[in-house]
Image (cartoon, rainbow, N blue to C red; front, side):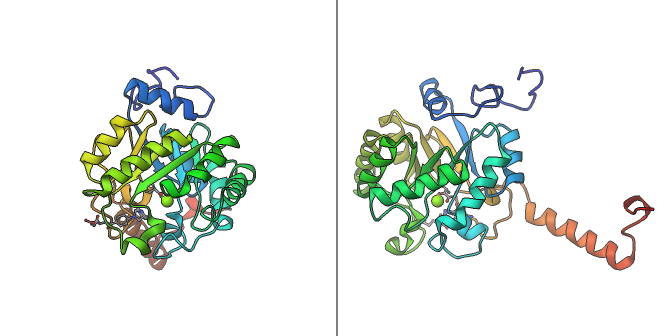
Length: 283
Ligand SMILES: Nc1nc(=O)c2c([nH]1)NC[C@@H]1CN(c3ccc(C(=O)N[C@@H](CCC(=O)O)C(=O)O)cc3)CN21
Ligand SMILES: CC(C)C(=O)C(=O)O
Ligand SMILES: [Mg+2]
C-alpha cells in the first residue's frame, strides 16, 4: 500500500506495508533492530479482529483475559483450551495481516513440556494460531524449549502473571527491589530458551527499561512504562468498556457510554413506534 492510500497509517514497515502477507516473528525482531515501537491489542472475535487488523495492528493476542471480559469470571483461572479455541479461530478468520498469538490458559502447560506441546498444537492446528504465549520464568523453561524445538514461536510473560494471582494475593506490581534481579534473570533465560518476545506486566518502568536494553528480543509492556519495544492493552480497556480499569489503562473512547446512548435510543424508538418506518420495512 502506498503512503498516499494509507493516510492514517504511521510510516512503519510493520503497518500494513507487506501487501497480502501476515506479520511474522522475524518482522518483530527486525522492528527492534530498527528501534521501531509497535502496538498489540487483544481480540476475541472476528469483527473486532477485522477492525484492528485493518488499522494495521501487527499482533493480535487472544488473551486468557477472555475469562474475565468474555466469560465474566473474576480471574483468568477458569478458562480451558476448549473455551479459547473457537475465539482464536474467529480472530484468525477475521484478520489477514496480523500475527495471531494464542494465550495458553491456566493448567494447559504447567504440568510438562509434553502437555504444553499438546495444548499449543491444538491452537495451531485447530484454530490457526501463529504463536502461543505462556506465563512464567525459570519454571517454564523446559516448556519454552520444547515448543521452540517443535517449531512453535513462544511469547513469554513476566511480572504480574495473572494465572498466579493466588500466590501474589491480588493484582499487584511485581519486580520491586530484589525481585527485579530475578525478573531480569528470567527474561534472559527465556530469550536463551528461544522465546521471540516477552510481555512485562505491572513492573516498575525503570526495571522494564533495563530489561528492554538487555534483551535482543522485543519487550511488550502493560503497566511497564514507556521504554518497552511494544505496548499491549486489553481492547475493552482502551475503548472504555471496562468498569474499573487498572492504573496503566488509557481510555481512548467511551464505548460503554456510546453503547448506552445508542441502545436507549433504540429502546425509545421501539416504545414510541418511531422505529421501524417504511425505510426499514419490506413491501
Ligand atoms: N480487562 C482486563 N484488563 C487487563 O489488563 C487484564 C485483565 N482484564 N484480566 C487479566 C489481567 C488482570 N490484570 C490486572 C488487573 C488489575 C490490576 C490492578 O488493578 N492493579 C493495581 C495495581 C496495584 C499496585 O499498586 O500494586 C492498579 O491500581 O492499577 C492490574 C492488572 C491485567 N489483565
Ligand atoms: C494482557 C495480556 C498481556 C494478557 O495476557 C491477556 O490479555 O490475557
Ligand atoms: Mg493472559
